[in-house]
Image (cartoon, rainbow, N blue to C red):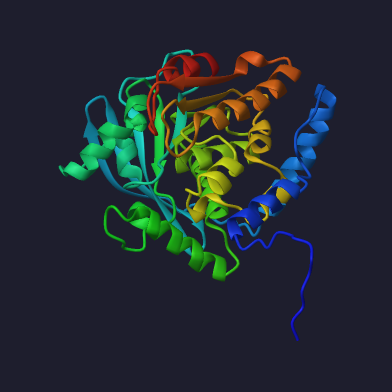
Length: 353
């Protein structure tokens, strides 16, 4: 039987439009709108607990069982390769760079930085290892990826790990297909009720645990920095773990609306299921306050638009102003694309770490 009607109405067939409308209608339980310090502190306690729960399940802690597999003297620093256990059935490979120049006599050891990679060749990129290949050399030059190497030369102990799905922890996808590889790892993990962003944030926290065992490190002076997916991990780890004293996020902080619903260009490892019911990336960043936070944003970043980045940074700046520490949050806007800049890094760390 045919049914006819005399009025017109929309027949939406677009899943993109459907999902964007759902985003706009969805309430975010922990959007940060605190206008005074007391309100913010109540919000932060509740929001951090809820974010931790939203990212569950978390691995069970275990002994680090550290193994040093190599030690190489480099110009101005010693490079160690270490393995440590993050959970009973998973080890983390990492490079630890230690300056050969001793710390100042009045210091309680070296300050330390966790330097986290994004898409590419894993920890090798961050410490400047190219293996004599054009692909790796180009990645290092184009993205200015070797910020770990730069920081050890400035007197910081540096740890750079391979995130799950990258470097020595990849599934064996050839160079140049890292994004496909990390998405496949994410899909397999999701089938088991796991989330790669949670697991990698946990491993980054285990890097903190390990740094605290190193006698040459001042445990009160540990920061974290990362480009792109490294910025993702820095954002969430710093929001959840207050042992991170300073955070530098490059080529990442914007909005989930911009990344996924508008540009549609991100990998599955950067997503927490149902995160938008909790809040947005600006709200995650507000959990880092009042600790020092530096954001790097390129004017030509094709992955994370500058307009969204500036808008989100303005939201976070308001929280720092509310807490009467506006000087502890800054956005470094530089001319360039999706890369590490580093122009303000040395001064920022010298001031706050």
